Image (cartoon, rainbow, N blue to C red):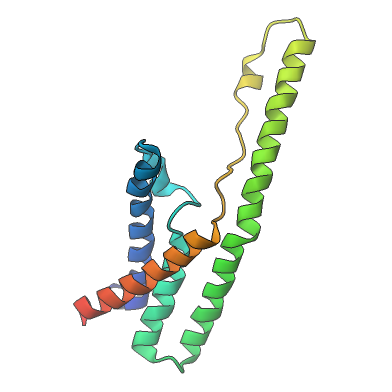
Length: 158
């Protein structure tokens, strides 16, 4: 039953849920399309990874203090996660975009070069996922969301 009273865990999970949920209306405002797939996707505004790690770190700070080793661990963990989200994962998304375009161009070339009927297998190629990482502003607002949610939850629960 200790799991049910683990405030840092629940603060982080709640932050992930809220950040993922908020992506749908924010995308609707920007595109005028409802995209329910954003509930389970990576990337986008706000960063649920950033929200989770900052909520976790904030909750640990509230329970154990800013001088605790647990706060140090979660803070360094959070910095690494947020740095990765804006760096490596974002650039991997850019690479996926280029690779998907190359595959599309190659498939067009093959179709034009050959005169026999198209095979269904070549049309069912799965594209690489392009929305992997985050812009720095997405990470910033995800982190801010995590801190605000952890502080709010702590005020409500305790």
